[in-house]
Image (cartoon, rainbow, N blue to C red; front, side, top):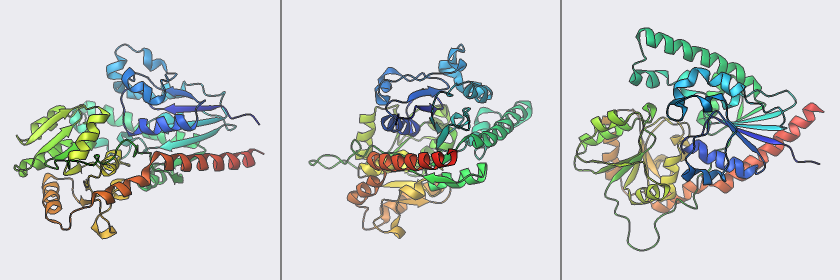
Length: 384
């Protein structure tokens, strides 16, 4: 029996985030697969993490200025993803948080979608994306809303091209049901718990600062984190990352906030190991950084909605690894920091580490392989 020909379709490659962690493991699970994406501008320093592979791309790759501004071509994304020819493959795996799942497939092809989320800006977080860009009102706002309305119609319609969905969390499974009317299995993303580890035995970490990191885009609410620590002037906060919200985040910060910028994976691990707690203010679909923090033995203070509810244990659950705040406001986060410091006994780093192990890469591979095998059997029976 010949092995199935496999294509993996990713949205785009230009930086590294949680979606790229999943992509790397999917490529490990399907080593002979061909890789496709809207564009591929991944820096050479990061390409080794996907085995040096380069994606087959769309016409967007050749648009002048696309390397820096391809996101501005959003209205063309559906047409571009549909231009990819994956007709030669038996199995198509889309790794999608935007349009990858809309790739054209035939009824004779098994199409499995690992869905990080239905397209956020077309569904639930539209205002958070448009308002900071001055696109919430006026003629520009009307045009932006019309574009996103059309994207949402396309996004729902093309969900029918997927044979079976996998959600990265229970939270996203509910969103897939609401947005697409489809059921989904849940396989949490892989976390590199072999790399993100507690510090070696020796001098204990300083634990004299709080730490937050992410891509600085609106829904991550890094401005909220910075603003909350204005009300905590005797606490030190370190912020890592960069992005389009740079000016807003810096304007919200007080003198007790330090900016680390974009950091390497090794520097990220060091910052996580040394922090008193990792602060996470986003309503995230899964949220890989809170798990990486726990893998380093560091507790998490998180907004109590979204994927964090599946990855962080509060005291009510026993063996806590963090605590939640219930409103995305600086006041609520500042109160949570004070509560974290007042609670006794303190959170045990060993409990944080044990909880993070539930999301290891080995666990992901086992669950993904079992899911693909079951889907292939069901598809073969259906076709037969």
